[in-house]
Length: 421
Ligand code: KE4
Image (tube, rainbow, N blue to C red; front, side):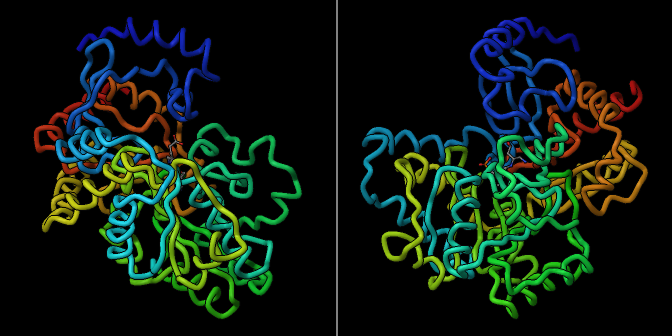
């Protein structure tokens, strides 16, 4: 399939002139796989079209938000209707109350919630709240987990940190990082060695999906829940990816564990900028204007973003939603793992193949993957109309809009792309 990329190439030159690295988020620059990124003109359902008219089956889904598929009519209509009444008020508005209700109904551990504009803002604010509540400074995170780009969390971070080998970003003062204790994922001994009485909180992705997809060992989350309960440290589950993805109530519903604080993003905004953090009322009421922990945002609770989130969550609450996602992903992954050699992981509608013959249990073992081979496979798939994550250290997302025909085309493309390797 001969694809032209003439207009993308032209736009890329302009983008490089105005935007650092030509992008507004590093992973989009294709540095993890080589080549020039395509510029998307429009998207519908499970497909993207680039500015040269090339069509792709999309397994990135804007890194998770587009679980209904792109341009879902109910979401588009909700945003259009909201926009007709104004785009931002800076006052309370009825839609933020409705979305808060939908979030609290889905997550029993969330008694109160505050909306922000990104996952980063959510985790940054949750950390500050945990420090304010416990009056402790130190936090615990896990190597390779990514919680957005707030200073305290850009320590041994995944996602772009793993892709570009900059897990510890420049510009983060050493004394910031000093308060961040980073442990290897799934390492029970390391967790036991922490003096939890001096820890404000531990933050973890309950479904680690930012160094590729790496399941937590059985009992690991329960151990963190127990150690935090005993020591007064707070358990923060970063469900920015897993919330409303793995189940309506996220990984907490799957594991039957309640967090003290939960961070959300992506899906709850239906493709518009929304993040959220919520949890125990006694903790959340430490937030201004009630308590002494300050946090604010001009566009927090924005009516258009709330409208997109409400339409998305209401559509997801239809019966059979998660069963359909499971079925579609099983159809894809059962055949995929016979075609593509590597270490396969699939959790719900998330999937990932590490191009390594090693078992992958943490960041170090994920990094044994052959990223060059992944890059060649990525381009082999792209040339055949299938868009995977442009990094070995991200994951694939299946949406409710993916069809059996999409999956058949994907498997055919994978067979040819592997042969071409
Ligand atoms: P944002 O600030 O990008 O909205 O959310 C940060 C974040 C927080 N927590 C988790 C578990 C996340 O996965 C993310 C963001 N995910 C990456 C993709 N793995 C966003 C893609 C990008 O950086 O462009």
